[in-house]
Image (cartoon, rainbow, N blue to C red):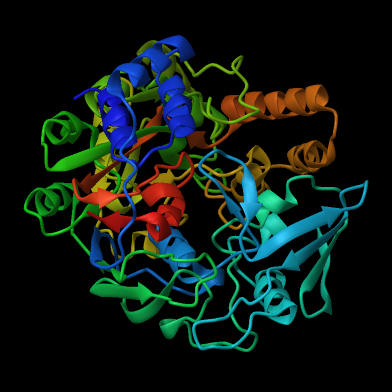
Length: 525
């Protein structure tokens, strides 16, 4: 079954709107007239009424998972966060920001003073009303002295978070940021009761509440009946079941032991698409599984060594061998064609083993350990091994596979060169701030400079779109030429659900429909 066939089936089932069909068909290169013709031939969508009840079983989980917002690290955590908590705003599948806990917001002309107004009647899972004081404490934890929150960098310009009254939150910034409402949708910026400290049984105001949370064993969330969106969620609950690897994940779906999986390996798309019991969701995104070279330690601190690595990477081979042609070749920046400020002029280093060998010889090093784990992405190990293959003749790449449990705490940002994995972020600024700025909580390469930081800050406040686009383009050139970030392919978000799972809306930012956003809309037929 083709990607377009899959979209038609989702549209006919009522799981995809007409607007959503056109948007996603366009991402596959289908022009509007052709898309309209296909829908006309397909006939009207089935107007199915969502039914309540049933549990959705999801293959997900490892021992590092947490419900504490300031400690959240990976996609699993983000999905749990969006199920259990609310944030002030939400980033919709259309890539537009909409209200979540906040129903409206306003800003001054300089974009330095923001006010958010809470919806009325919001309650936490313990029955307590959600107030502005709760929001102030929840957000303030990320920027408190000594905080190691990944979101700390996103809030680096915040000078004050205040609650003038019970339903208003005022956020003051040291410099303008037109993207603040989008930033407030980040899954780390979750709202919990003031004074709450036991995050083993987290309390939020999201669509599901915690029944059981045993990382690496089982996570069970049940419907919160007082959730503010009328009638939602439709499911009785969610059962997250850890599965050890990609092959086992596929087997559990095909055996009917789970209802939804994410990060489907590209090699399995054809098999799953031909199975009438399964729906494959194939969505172009800015997500990727990358290689990290830490520039604060040898040998990856040598610019010549880093250039050697980039010239030894056969991106076409990885696209075709690992991703089966599903994805987009990338330059060595985290900003891809799904972003507004993607710079098409930035080109990847050419695959040239003679050039690679020249730079390795210049650096005096032609061997390195590359640590990898499937927790960095189902394709991480295959990318590492394919890179090992493509670098032969220029460098000896020793691939070391490690267990998923403990990878983020014991290997990542500890070893000079590792695999890593990222979902897309809502804005270019959010990505650069958190991962490519000095002091950024997830600056995994430790690359950066005061001058580059100043460029990020200036672009954030620039209101002239032409100037802002050029500033981001300049930054992408710099990262591509000098940074420790290496990426071969922007991957499509590949997910699969059982045929009876309805209402599933894929999202270009975050797995399981936008870090689990879609789960409040899902029902079982």
